[in-house]
Structure formats: C-alpha cells, structure tokens
Image (cartoon, rainbow, N blue to C red; front, side, top):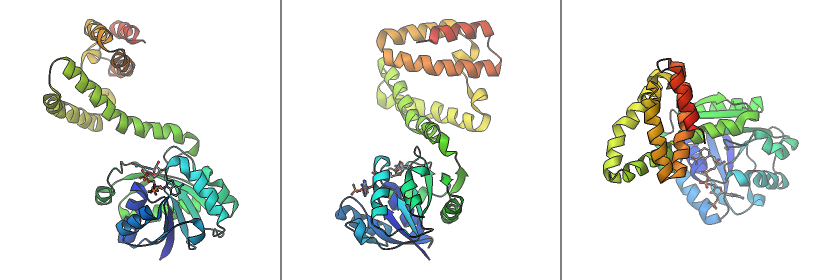
Amino acid sequence: MKTINVIGCGNVGKTLSRLWTRHRVFKVQSILNRSLESGLRAVQFVGSGRAVRDYAQLERADLVMISASDEAIRACCEQLCLAGILEEGVIVFHLSGSLPSTLLEPAGAEGALVASVHPVKSFADPLRAVETFAGTFCAVEGDPQACEAIRGALDPCGATTFPVDPHFKTVYHAATVVVSNYLVALMEVGLRCFEKAAIPRETAIEIIRPIATGTLDNVFELGTVAALTGPIARGESSVVARQGEALAKWDEAIRSVYGSLGQIAVELSAAQGHADPEALAAIKRMLEP
Ligand SMILES: NC(=O)c1ccc[n+]([C@@H]2O[C@H](COP(=O)([O-])OP(=O)(O)OC[C@H]3O[C@@H](n4cnc5c(N)ncnc54)[C@H](OP(=O)(O)O)[C@@H]3O)[C@@H](O)[C@H]2O)c1
C-alpha cells in the first residue's frame, strides 16, 4: 500500500486520512501539526499514523498532503523541501479551492509531482464529514500523473472528481463561497426582514423552510430561469419601487443586497420573456446603487 504524510491534519486532513485508512487506499504515516497534542488527536481520529514534532522527524512517503490552512501552505511546502525527504516522483498536493497547485513549485523543483484537490464540501465536523463524504465533488488540477493518482484515491471514497483550470481557481472558489456561505448570509437577510416586520425569528425560520427548500428544488429541477417567480418575474415595477424605498429607509446594506441580486433577477426575468421589457428596464434602473 502507498504511504502518505499529512502536514496540517485539521478538519479536512483528518476526514480524508480516516477515509483512506478505512478504504485501505493509503497507509497514513507521519502527521505534523503546529502542536504535537493536535497531531496526537489527529492520529487517534485517523486510526493510523504517528504524530511528529517537526519536519526532521517525517518519514519518507509516496505522497504528502499539505492540508494546513491556505495561508500556511507555501511555508509548509518550503519547510518540507528543506527537510530533504522529497524524492523524485513523490506526489505533493494541497486542498485549497482558491490557490493553484503551482504554489507548490518549490517541491516541483525538487522533483515532486504537484497537484491540488478541492473537495466541494463543508467540513465543519470531521466525524460527520467522513460519514457523508460519498458523493462529494472534488476539483483536481496539477501534474497529470499526480492527478491520476489522486483521482484513483478519491474514487473508493465515493467522490466524483472534475478538472479545474488553475488560472480561474479564485473565481471558481468564489462560486462555491456564493452558493454555500452567501446562501447562509442571504437567509440571514430574509430573517432580519421578517423580524423588522414583527415576525419573531423562531416563527420566521419555520415560515421560510418550505419556500426556501422548494425554491432550491426548483433551481435543480428546472434551472435558474424557470425557477424565478415573484414581482421581478412578473415585471411589477411599483412593487419593486415600494420595497426598495422601504428597505432604503431602514437598512442601506440590506437595500444594497436587494438591489444587486434584483439586477440578476431582472436578467433571469428577461430570459423567461414573460415580463414587459419596458417594466424590466425601469426595475433595473431603480435597483441601481
Ligand atoms: N473546511 C472546509 O470546509 C474546507 C473545504 C474544502 C477545502 N478546504 C481546504 O482544506 C485546507 C485545510 O482546511 P481545514 O478547514 O481542514 O483547516 P483546519 O481545520 O483549521 O486545520 C488546519 C490544520 O493545519 C495545521 N496547521 C496550520 N498551520 C500549520 C503549519 N504552519 N504547519 C503545520 N500544520 C499547520 C493546524 O494545526 P493545529 O491543529 O496544531 O493548529 C490544523 O491541524 C485549506 O486549504 C482549506 O482551504 C477546507
């Protein structure tokens, strides 16, 4: 079985290491975190490996996963190179969604094959992430041979891999931020509006559950154009005008979100073709900042 060292074994590192141990894909060897205590906890979670204090204690391995936080990846890679354990053909990869594999170029200069893997999943709780990992989509880019090996390691864990152009990784990652993190922020905006309308948050969260989940179902089943309903889909400029004014009087930040997203909704409505084009043009103007 191929061996793997893990540098920065936190939420994602622990999840992948435990999955690879469970599916007998890799033998997890050395685990290096900032503190030895954290490394020891990671070893316990993974069910394999040995926590080490520094780079000098790393054993040789076929692969090295740098699963430290984004800002630490480059420094970890440089320290790994200084340790002098990288042999020709060792695969070194990181897990950042926004940074390219070329960040690992110091390892490449030592003869390593470098890549990046970004699982499109929220790893808030590693235990839960292990059990729900199957079905996760993972963006893979880098050296073709390294990508091939990583795809082969993710397959037994039930992941689906797809290629991503390293030049567009930042925008690609912004997409995942918008559909996940910003969706949460958008729900918060809606809840604040309910509260402003004197509907308590506990009631509001129950009110939005069916409409929010139903809308998401519509997006996945029908696409964004057909899923759009409401005043902008109908071209009702007077409704949009009143809402914009009411929000502007109360909270400029919320009015700004309403305006920016409304302009995208105008584009979707135009693509539907049901609303009066003149009404949509008027709505677009009134939604401008
Ligand atoms: N979280 C997600 O949902 C998610 C999803 C996809 C991809 N990612 C990517 O996965 C990577 C890891 O994220 P994460 O959420 O797993 O982070 P995390 O839970 O904060 O874990 C980071 C780990 O890296 C260690 N570390 C930090 N700096 C280090 C250094 N200089 N040397 C050695 N170890 C170091 C930390 O050690 P200590 O425990 O000792 O502090 C910690 O164990 C990031 O590139 C992130 O962008 C995250």
